[in-house]
View 1 (cartoon, rainbow, N blue to C red):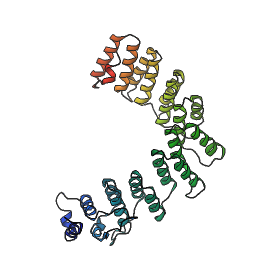
View 2: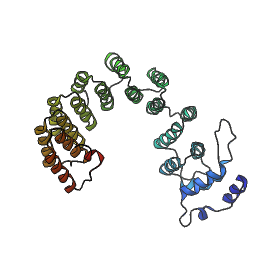
View 3: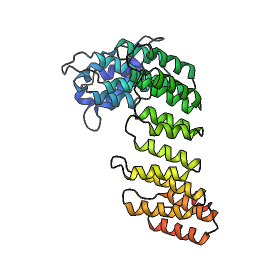
View 4: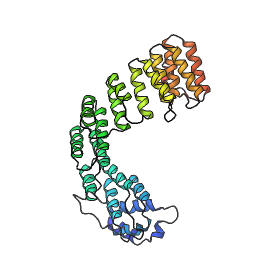
Length: 346
């Protein structure tokens, strides 16, 4: 069937037919877009979007977001988004929400269509710090560190206002790329020296993660203690893991004790499991079991397979195979299934 014939059939089908039975709005829209098959607007002439006007009364931000997310072809998503920006008629006075712009930006960036995404946001005056952060992360995921840094400096010069989101994105990109020294230098200059941004919990957590990643635990601890905003669960768990990897179990235990006393951020399964694993690797099985018992008796979180595997592995390393088998039985009785790691511990 040719595109012209397919589109013609859709044009001659009333909306009531398209939406009848099991056929819902979104599949109908996707079917029309498939028939139109729009391509890159920079290299191909866009088809007439008037066939989509039959859906104008159905437009809501949630519908637009779902259509964009469901479509696999980014050019179809862009074509639909562009039409929905000014539908005719528009009886409900539909306007795109912030989440619609997020959805189309994510779709285009996921297909490496950076310039199309940038042009769209500039056209609609939506090129905010938050959106630039998405561009920085997308460039970082592709290894384009120079572009990520360049984008941040554009924001820093005040082209789109505040730069907290873009700065946090840049820190994340640098840490992920093992450029922790660069991230630390940016932190010292942008946050401490020039006070360009007021760091939030994401800023601190990302930097602490990077410092722990390269073994700079003293700097990580200092930054953790000096945080000017509240800590979250991820912040606590990262610093606990950093201490455990260095074998600094007293410091790790101190952080977990802080969490126990923090009603807003109590320890979770990851917190306890990390500490238990750290104790086991140092041969401190008494402390590991004490921590396990506290976890179970606390009632706020339950041991998982990783928790039991840490204990079983530690007991096996200590030569206590019988106790390791008892722990394995306890794990099964709790309803958890052992995995390969469980059986390779002993």
